Length: 265
Length: 328
Ligand SMILES: Cc1cc2nc3c(=O)[nH]c(=O)nc-3n(C[C@H](O)[C@H](O)[C@H](O)COP(=O)(O)OP(=O)(O)OC[C@H]3O[C@@H](n4cnc5c(N)ncnc54)[C@H](O)[C@@H]3O)c2cc1C
Ligand SMILES: Cc1cc2nc3c(=O)[nH]c(=O)nc-3n(C[C@H](O)[C@H](O)[C@H](O)COP(=O)(O)OP(=O)(O)OC[C@H]3O[C@@H](n4cnc5c(N)ncnc54)[C@H](O)[C@@H]3O)c2cc1C
View (cartoon, each protein chain N blue to C red):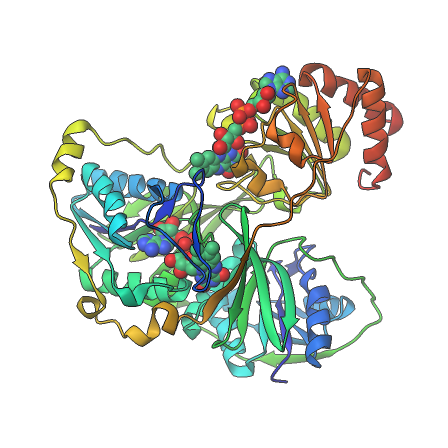
């Protein structure tokens, strides 16, 4: 089994976000980066899958120098190999360009059976990179996965549960597949001290556009078809009314107001 | 027509999901602006009725691909048919709903056509002949406006309920364009084995009313009370991450940055502090009622009506009032 897991480094949502307004990109330096929360589930699923089969896990992340941290964390959790995908030409990539770059790395790794990624990032938030990856690679597209029921490596088959509107869909698919996972699929483990110490010493290898055979005109600001042209803070809701007085009166007022909205049937 | 606006219609086994015509309203507005028409497109096995319904919600044309291989939704099959249509007719813009189906099909279609897309739009406008799409990023702390100059069609998913449902007029008619497109079953990677309908069937995203509980409701009993209020109102039950992580309710109920984004007409938040990641999922609800015993809880800054108090006293009182006033 050859398992790839895609990990994105995102700014901590608690932290202040700094923008490069003209470019519409994030100033990632100086921000406290964390692993995208959904990617912790993807990484854990990769580890669980490896426990059932012989195999290797290769973690990849496209991002600046700082993204090495999330890959080092993956190494501390005993993934076999990591690659940071980085090139000045990658900056400003949209979802398609991102998926195209990740796909190029997956092709370079070769003979991959399953790719795990998160449902969505907490910064760009688009939630489509997994589906785009599957489409570009021609792999089975398995999104919103809440459970991997079975992997039959010999027959190149996987059965998963997808959590979608109104219920759970059970799908059997051919491998290779891209599986994007939701929260709740597993309980991510924490690295142990020995793992952390070992990982601290490992140099994080980087692949650039040439290593990946990527046409620079197709990625980054130049290549992206989608461009962020404006960033704004949404208007505040404006604090409403705090209802004061006896509970009896408050309950009367609030229920009247809600009934007046004519939504309750 | 080259600058038409297309709306993707979702369905389950030939029955359009109730809200799938929603985007024909904003689609019509855009088309009027562009001097073009709003059209629906649909992929499936038996979709004749869907076409008729689409006309009644304002579509002037319906493009369809019908074939046995499209019985039951499969992302890759539907995306292949959708991108075939989009590539052949190259409308100006294609709108999908930001549901699991809409997202899956739009993303795979955009990728197979070789360009990016904007997801989960909450605002669409035409400015200087250019389509500008506004979406939330960073858990709703920022909105970003996105343009797509290179791609045609521009593809976007639109947050459910971001725009009003158009009026239905059953007398309206239109033209149907049937395209033949098929894929061999053996060329498809996936097979749907079964669909397990959820007991709770929480369709938070489509709910008009949500009663949501946080850590402050303290446990299972608290959620029983949430459920009781929800049942009276015909509401869905939501939850904060803290409540989900405590194991009081399942993840499918989670509202927020790493849960669902909702936009009900009424959102009642009980024992929820109002952390930014929770607000991210519900701050655009029309009317927010917050019940919290801490007068300084940030949720009050975002609530239409705030009630400072212990939910254990407040909620039963509200239940009692609703019961009397609604004759339940
Ligand atoms: C505020 C903001 C708004 C944006 N809006 C748009 C837009 O509307 N349209 C558009 O095309 N682009 C947009 N972008 C760019 C887009 O976010 C980037 O292209 C990004 O690299 C991929 O999208 P995502 O983070 O939304 O990924 P998602 O699709 O949300 O991520 C899903 C999964 O893909 C994997 N993944 C994603 N990125 C990486 C990575 N760099 N390295 C490793 N794995 C990864 C992870 O497993 C992740 O869990 C926006 C960026 C920002 C910062
Ligand atoms: C990356 C990331 C993603 C996240 N995603 C999400 C998400 O999707 N959704 C989400 O909700 N959170 C999310 N969080 C967590 C978020 O930061 C908060 O921790 C969480 O929302 C807190 O939940 P809460 O308000 O229920 O609990 P608390 O913050 O503990 O608040 C409980 C509230 O209940 C009140 N209270 C206590 N007892 C009573 C009573 N008897 N009657 C009335 N009020 C009472 C208290 O005054 C308090 O305000 C995320 C965090 C991170 C870092």
